[in-house]
Length: 183
Image 1 (tube, rainbow, N blue to C red):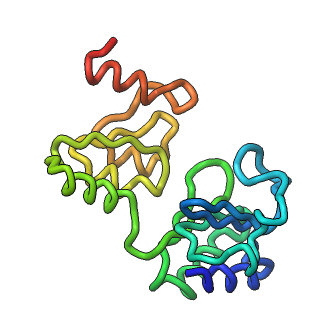
Image 2: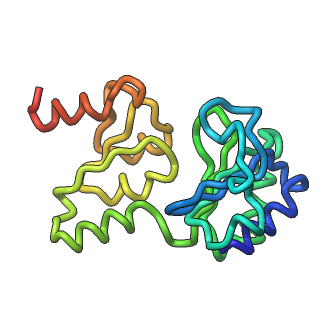
């Protein structure tokens, strides 16, 4: 809900949040330009890309935040305490303290299940790949869940298999070539 986005923006400093981004089907907004992490949040923002009441006219499908590493547990607790009945709070497993917020009960497994039901694909015939916390339900749901070599340890524990190569090494493509005997 966009009201949650505005509440988070208002409490940004107290929550230890450095950058807040909201995204939707045709929208990507951030509250400030990113000066902290390369290739993640935008480094420059046009007036219509700033996360504010004028530009955020619809509910975002997800929000992503860069938080102060030392305040990460406190930030997660505060978000879950204040909005836990409306949102999922996911902590990314990479080197940067990034949180992802999504509507409660919405995850990739629901999307995959919807497609499987629509196209009448048996769950055992679903092959899914992932590398982060937001892939957990999908990896668990799939008939064959594969986690990338650079994936989080928590996700690897759910996997049926792990790629020998990372995302940057085209691990998914190499895995499919082997798995489908295309090589």
